[in-house]
Amino acid sequence: MNTADMALLGAIEAGGTKFVLAVGSSSSEILARHVIPTLTPDATLAAAAEWFAAQGKLRALGIASFGPVELDRASPQWGHITNTPKPGWANCDLAGYFADRFGVAVGFDTDVNGAALAESRHGAGKGASSLAYVTVGTGIGGGLVLDNTPVHGAAHPELGHIYVRRPTGDSGFAGICPHHGDCLEGLASGPAIKARWGASLSELPADHEAHGMVAYYLGQLCHSLFAMTAAEVAVLGGGVMKTPGLIERIRECSAELGAGYLPGTARHRIVAPGLGEDSGITGALMLAEDAG
Amino acid sequence: MNTADMALLGAIEAGGTKFVLAVGSSSSEILARHVIPTLTPDATLAAAAEWFAAQGKLRALGIASFGPVELDRASPQWGHITNTPKPGWANCDLAGYFADRFGVAVGFDTDVNGAALAESRHGAGKGASSLAYVTVGTGIGGGLVLDNTPVHGAAHPELGHIYVRRPTGDSGFAGICPHHGDCLEGLASGPAIKARWGASLSELPADHEAHGMVAYYLGQLCHSLFAMTAAEVAVLGGGVMKTPGLIERIRECSAELGAGYLPGTARHRIVAPGLGEDSGITGALMLAEDAG
Image 1 (cartoon, one colour):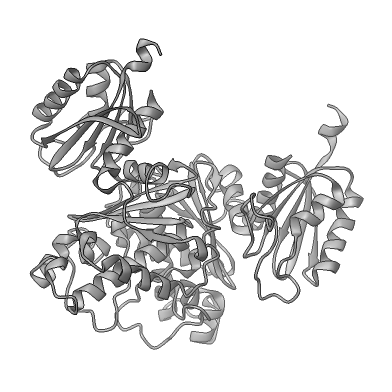
Image 2: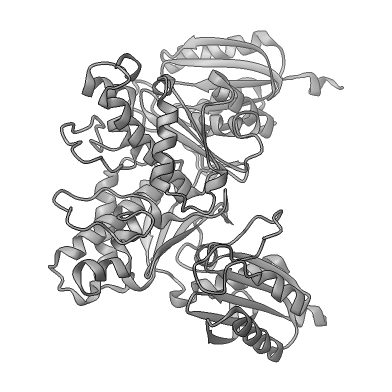
């Protein structure tokens, strides 16, 4: 093994509240990790660079970032966070900063595409050629890996902003999405649940209407994913998904809505992340591996 | 140019009522075409083979077929129509029949994936890396091409069977899908429109409620496609889409539902097929080209 092979892969899961940093020898082995708060770009990127510099020589770096981000390699904005409302972070050249600082190849994608990639290669979707990773938390976002490649398309999916059908009698709540009112995120994200019922889903008793309604919304998301993208596996993560019993209810709703019709039905699965909290950072390591 | 290069590409667009046959020198040049009715598999496949045999030597054949079909190359059922209710056609080994008969490589996909492929390379989506082709007619079906490859996933998309939100007051019609009632196909396909309003959309006056409702359903489909798959282009074909003014209304509804939020908004387009009626057969030629 020569020196270049000994050098490390670096990984950043860039989130709105914290940056998770890691180094590994490959995407299946994290050697060290570190978490720093998301402050200003100047402070946060410098702190990240300092930690990486202390770990040893890097051979490539992968970044799985909160968005919106520019993924088009042909764009001068590639590797930037674009028009986020987060103060100071709009037009932040994340990829460029680390490419300049360490002189290595940088892989870059959305946080959820990174997580989808990790779950499809090392996690709950091992063996499946197509997978959607959805996080249901402060917002609802998702990444899509089809035939082992993250989907970018016109930019990247924003699947929290589809509209879902509301069950009969479900009309008293207008939803909290500032753009769409009662789109999926406006109805089923953590803050939407709190705004509507005054508590998180886990805090509400098992016979509370919230459980059935949220499962119905998210069951529709899964059915739509299966019908529209033919994904084999829907991996559901994020804070709201920690609610006991929720994933089982979602499976029931999705199956009921599909009625056994879709040609891939026998292969469809709705599962929790196989990598637990590590989907995002593992995805970032994979982005480094693919870039290096 | 040697003899092998001179041999023809053969193409079949296999539909429930007719088979369109063509030969070409490449996917951008159809040299001859022929249409035969879809009768029993024995009669129809023999008639197709006879026509091809009369055209000259084939170097490869592509088939874009009605479904459901098996697209998994690892399955012994690959290239078959699977469990169609169409009498006689269940488990028909379409690809195998022609591979045996002509001893050539056979490419095989769904009719709508074929059309999506053709529109993305030669039609309305030229230059776009991601495109959805949707046909709105007797049923609603769609194919998806992402990064220049048709999406298969667990099988293939069946995007006519997503559920859409119905506008306030739209409650008197239960939908006609035998599996899902008022899924998109149950509400917006040609037969659904006839069952609900007693006429086709083109026959109803421009101020009839049907126009706005159908546009609202199909506008939601487009918004969901953009949000979920990040497709750049939605190509809408099929009989219902021949209704004057419909595509403009769909564009308005989709834009209103998206509210400018999706990161790819500026690149999203909703368009008619660039190849007119030739999307499917051109796609079949491309499948031949890729197989040969």
